[in-house]
Structures are given as C-alpha cells and as structure tokens.
Image (cartoon, rainbow, N blue to C red; front, side, top):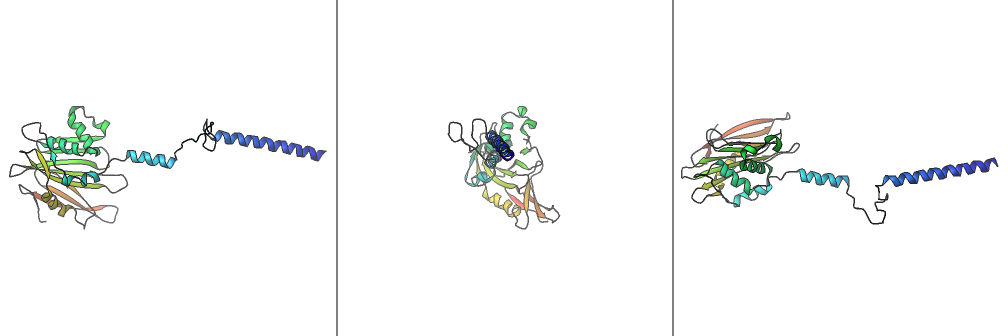
Length: 257
C-alpha cells in the first residue's frame, strides 16, 4: 500500500508540474496571440524581426549621399533667378540647392535663405554662413562629422561669373564622400552651365592618386583655392600637403612649390 501511495503522490506532482509549464508557455505569447504567432481566431499575426526593424530604422536615418548630384551635374544647366540687378552668392546657392534639395546641407541652406532671421542653428544642428560681399556661403553640420556644402564665385573678364561648389558627406566610422563642381554663369541668359574646363584643372590637382584624400578651401578673402592633400602617415593620422590654384581671371593655374 505504501508503494501505491508513493506512486499516486508522484503522479499528482507530475500533473501539477505539467499544468504549470503549459500555463507559463501560454503567457510567453502576446495577449491575443498563441505562442506559434497565431491570433485567437486562428489568423496569422504579422511579425517583424528585430534585425529587419533595425535595418529599416538605419535606412531612414541615413541622409542621401552625393551620388545623385555627381551623376547629374555635368549635364544639368541651372537657371538663376536674381533678386537684384546682379546675381550674388545667395542667388547661386538658392538655385543650386533647389536643384539638389535632397542633400541635407542643401536643405538647411534653403531653409536659411527662406528666412535667415528665423533660422535656429541649435534646432537645425546646422550652421549657415553667408558672406555676400565676398561671394561665399556655407552650410555645415554642427558636429565633429564633416557634412557640408560650400560655395563661392569669381568674376570673369568676359562679364560672366565662375561658380564653385565643394561638398563633403562625412560619416562617423566610414570614409567620407567628397565632390566639387564648377559652373559658368551668363548674366544675359541667367543660366549656370557646367564648366568642365575648370573642373579638369582642379581635378588634376585634387584627385592625385598619390594621396588618400583631398579638401578644397574656397576663398572668403582673396581669389585663390587652396587644395589640401592627405596621405596616411602610418600613425593613425595624416600628413597634409597644400597646393595653391591661382585665379587668372578666367580659370586657375597651379603655383609651383
């Protein structure tokens, strides 16, 4: 009798454990769902993995890069709408940024130009500097990451203007994108036409394969462009070589070091 009682007690204990286990499994699913991912009425429940969700959030947060601009600018003239008798740097910036308004620094520049006094640098996390007398404007991300659009123009001997654009789209742990472009502006037609002759002069210096990267410094005072060329020094840093492109009144020429 004693053995049968022990067996009965053991069976009861096992039954209790099974009931507790099944109850716990039922609570692991969301309310209204079974553990298999079906709702109470038997219809499948749409679920999304954490990896897919994180990937989508990453794509939404990633700003558009420079590729769309680089692939289009050489074949895309831009019409200017001067606000005064003569086009200035803000007119050029308005037209260029409107043409390529998906790039974040261009969006911020357009917002600034629409109402400079209302532009809130802290809220936008962008600094916009407009120096109309010296023909210079920039829109820069307000962090340690380089992400900006800088523009400048030069008066040509034939009455036209040369408009330059330099952009960097930087990332925290990846190599940044860089791009530059030049336009000839004809005040009679109010059209900026891509100037490939000047582009090739700058390209020959800036895109030197002996260096890892480059940057262009457009003048706020003076007329020359400083090209900074970066080479890896092997100590988690870069050596910088500077070259100067001197303005001739129509294009640039490299000053011999």
